[in-house]
Amino acid sequence: MMLKIANIVGARPNFMKIAPIHRLMQSHNGFSPFLIHTGQHYDEKMSQTFFKELGMPEPDLYLGVGSGSHARQTAAIMIELEKIFFEQRPDRVVVVGDVNSTLAASLVASKLHIPVAHVEAGLRSFDRTMPEEINRILTDSVSDLMFVSEKSGLTNLKNEGFSGNKIHLVGNVMIDSLIEHLDKAEASTILDDLGIKSGDYALMTLHRPSNVDDEEVLRDIVSALEMITNDLPVIFPIHPRALKMLQEFKLDQEIRRLNNLFLLEPLGYLTFLKLMRYARLILTDSGGIQEETTYLKVPCLTLRQNTERPVTIELGTNRLVGSSKEDIISAVEAVINGDGVTGEIPHLWDGKSAARIVEILSQFNG
Ligand code: UD1
Image (tube, rainbow, N blue to C red; front, side):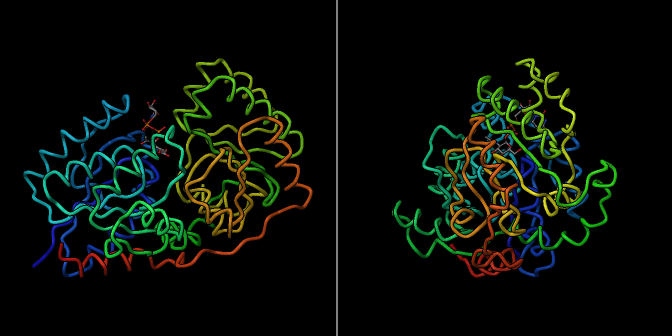
């Protein structure tokens, strides 16, 4: 019997996680996968570009829910998915990560008694002011299979009382995609286009509400950038949410005036991989970039107080810096002065995580 699998994506960081899983399922004779895109992210540069570069097929279904408050966005996805799950009757639903689309899909599926597999289960920041932490906890609580990317996930799930046979340490599917595309990314001409030398720039991303929605915090980060750009060019591909908030706080003119700052639109996957690989250091509040820099052994300064991915600090090149001007500047100076962190690659971040997931799913008869 072919198992009908609904693979769910919604936001940018979902695409490189589902891509290797969906592809392996397509060539597996036990699975008939279909891809549903909720439309949480909809700008071409946040969505279609990634489908193309990752070699993913067009989604079988596109819900087009777009932006909104958490309740509106989550509810809109749930209403659409309920109709689809009723019609299509998938045997399993696979969700990845911790975005609103992840939670919405797992709630709908579990109430229809469709087994849910959560990829990237068990990560915890222990900070419930983060919407993603709520999404992670709730998604895990209704999941039938939990695929864990690092050991802390096993510990967290065990502490929360989940039964061991649901939980599988499989490694990191985002790293599967990274390994697969690293060579292709070399063809990007971004460094020449910007006139910047390899190893001689910082790369920055920012989008978390705690950094971009708070005027004082964002102002502090912009003034840190002013100092950093005296030493090092900074490449800053900007997330639409961060751009909107810079404009709202009238900080966009200020940031555009900085000489050594390259404010760019959101970049494609391959270009961004190349920029990460050759950066002197990376400043970010993203979850995935903490992991990608660990794999690439590039120093990562995380502008947050906590991380749900502690292995990137324990073994990798990541450091928690916070978001104050002083802390950011001194962390950057430390890296520039040679205090670069060397790191190790975590267990099972080997490019084969999607294969492990597909194998376990094929054995699962829940
Ligand atoms: C979402 C995820 C976050 C993830 C991030 C990666 C949740 C709660 N958050 O945050 O975990 O790290 O994606 O990017 O699911 N917008 C556009 N075009 C788009 C998408 C968004 O302009 O294609 C703007 C809109 O103004 C929107 C805002 O960005 O209101 C926020 O989008 P949303 O999907 O709610 O959350 P993100 O901040 O992108």
